[in-house]
Length: 133
Image (cartoon, rainbow, N blue to C red; front, side):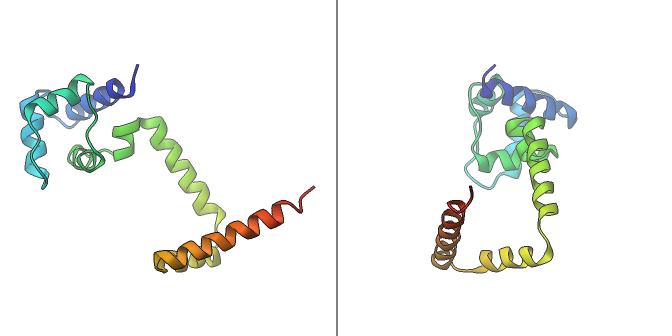
């Protein structure tokens, strides 16, 4: 099964789980009342439901918020969302407060300075990786 078809199945299930009728006109109306961009057509929505297209990330976010489902779960499935949660948990557990402070400080830098810091870290990584037997 391809990713468009799988997305369509997840979208259909999320709509039904949220208690809405699985009709393109319902999806089009509910989506457009929540989306501040250019309205989608019934034809576009029909393509989502048939597994012919996947909405843009911005539209996916609106769908996920409306249907009360994580965007990653809607787009990629529960396995992918669980993998992300697991990696995020591992990341959180691996860092102590000093490392978190350092990362927060890094993220507060302007982009040109962040690039310099990143290059320095990569240089150290290459230097010390060559020291390993």
